Image (cartoon, rainbow, N blue to C red; front, side):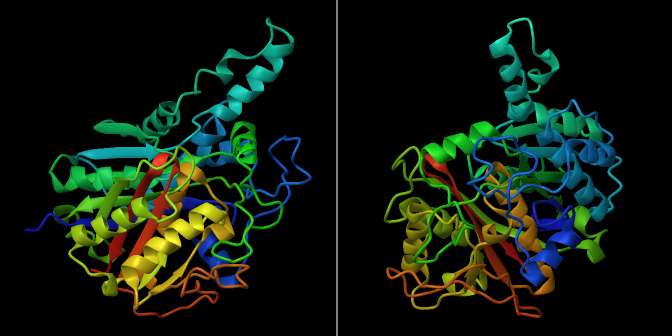
Amino acid sequence: MSNAVYVVGAGVISAIGNNVAENLHALETGTAGMGKMTLLDSIHKETLPVAEVKLSNEELSSLTGLPTKITRTALLSLVAAKEAIIDAAINTKGLRTGFISANSVGGMDKTENFYTEFRSNKNAGKLHDVVNHECGRPTEIVADALGIKHFVTTISTACSSSANAIFLGARMIKNNMLDIVIAGGVDALTKFTLNGFNSLMILDNEFCKPFDENRKGLNLGEGAGYIVMVSEKVAKELSSKIYCTLSGWCNANDAYHQTASSPTGTGSLLAMKGALQKANLSARDIDYINLHGTGTQNNDIAEGTAINTLFTPHFPKMSSTKSFTGHTLGASGGVEAVFSALSVKHGLIYPNLRFHTQMKELPFAPQTIFLKDQQVQNVMSNSFGFGGNCSSLIFSRV
């Protein structure tokens, strides 16, 4: 028996939908999730578009059964994780089950509320708004709600967080430490994040244009995405549920800069080459790349240069789904893992919205039309984060 890792369930909530079906419909119809801020209270609400999940905390609370005092991060996480588990339809009795979730800001949304009141009056502010601040708390809250106790942990490596959570889960399955893993990540929009990215001057005041010559920056988003992975032993009982395998993964770091990618794409190239090697595939075997594609000057040229180095002269179809969801930060690898697994299972290629002009440095351009019924054997999903932390995953047809 091999020790392959199978994907058998998926769940997602983002600015383009509250579940997998709604997200797929938006991807097919070219419906982006960006718009004016309606839930986040920011001085930038008139100038910086964001990709908000279209549900208030009260509505998320009613969906999850968690109280509204819980952080938005945990609320979003539980919506997507529950969908993934229901989709997989596994009887977990007697099976070693893990929950590995990623995020970058933890319960920062509630901490900001506390700070505003506390700053004006040191006797004000609700302490329950800060007790769930750290990154690990949303994971623990959701694991408790799901009844998962065998293994629970949190990954926080900026924009590669969810991808790293996913392949940690895969490694634990391959090494016979767990039978089932729900892995992915979540992030909620916060003023802290918005102001931080704005200070780096990498936010676009229009809807973002990944991999376009005239790109001006990214749009921040929020959401959660999880996949359910199982061992081959468990997969044999779930043959009708199998989406694909997670065949390859790699994390690399070029240590170039705290917030910028190497212009030569060194970390990106190392991650993609390592994932191909792990999957025992060549560059020509990849049918579609779900680009990291944030829309910033630095990121897109770094990733594009690495792709040019690795794939010349045979470029697969590629696109950035962040043109729909915005950059969901710690959630992005999980959200895009769901999209990648669906791409393999259903033969889908997603469009790169608002692409008009090819980058002069690159000999290729992203896909601009939604395609169905494609021969998709292998999908590469890239998640390249701050600090040079770069990860690539490969999803393959069974």
